[in-house]
Image 1 (spheres, rainbow, N blue to C red):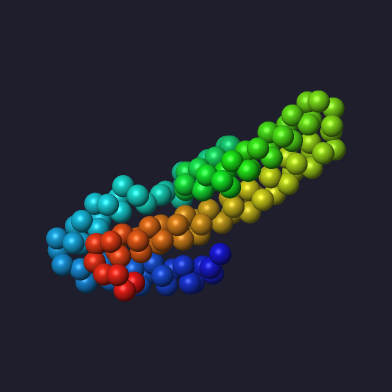
Image 2: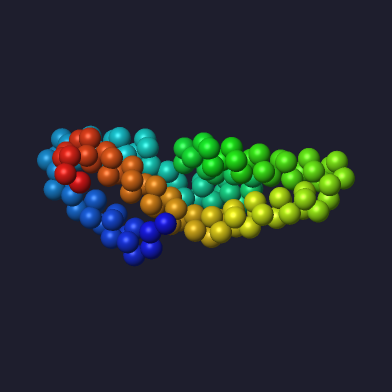
Length: 129
C-alpha cells in the first residue's frame, strides 16, 4: 500500500485534472464518480461488525473476501468440533489481519477511490493519466 502522503498527493492531482475538464465532461465525471466511489465509514463498519471479511466484498475484492470468510468459518467449525487450538488460531489470525484493515480503513478506501477516479478520468478525458 502506498503511504498516506502519496495517496493524498494522488487525490489532489486527480482533482486538479478534473477541475480543468470542460463543464460537460466534469459533470459527467462527477455523476459517474458518485455511483462508484465508496464510503470509508461503511467499509469500517462492515469490518468492525463482520470481521470475517465482508468489507472486502464492498470494495469488489471477491477473492480476498472469500478467503477471509472461509478461514474465519473454518476456525469456528474447528472450535465447535473440538479442535480448539487450530480453531482459535484461525479466528485470531483473521481478527489480527482485519484489525489492521480497520485502523487503515480511511486510507484503504481513499486509495480505492483514487483508482476509480483515475479510471473515470481516463475514460472521460484523456488516456495519458
